[in-house]
Amino acid sequence: MPSITIDIGTQAELTRAVDAFCGAYNYQATITNGGGQQIANPESRNAFAKRQVAEFVKKVIRNYEADRDSKIAIAAAEANSSSLAIS
Image (cartoon, rainbow, N blue to C red; front, side, top):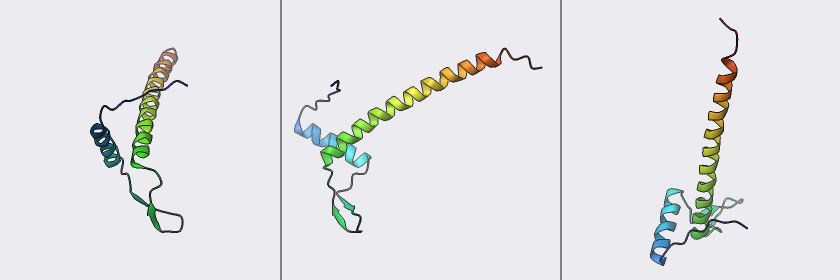
């Protein structure tokens, strides 16, 4: 399966990256379960950071493709409307 791999050089750098993603994307060490009780988050900090990296990549792709497709649609609409005989 095709993949993108990010290798972080040292444990200290990995810890720094995980801390940054957990801070930037509001990781919660405890969460509220369906019964309203606070429990330990079943998603580890590393898993959370990895998920956020994947979501970031998806967001970049989605935004790029939406912008590209919008520009193509606008250009096509402008080309089609220039031939309208409206005065």
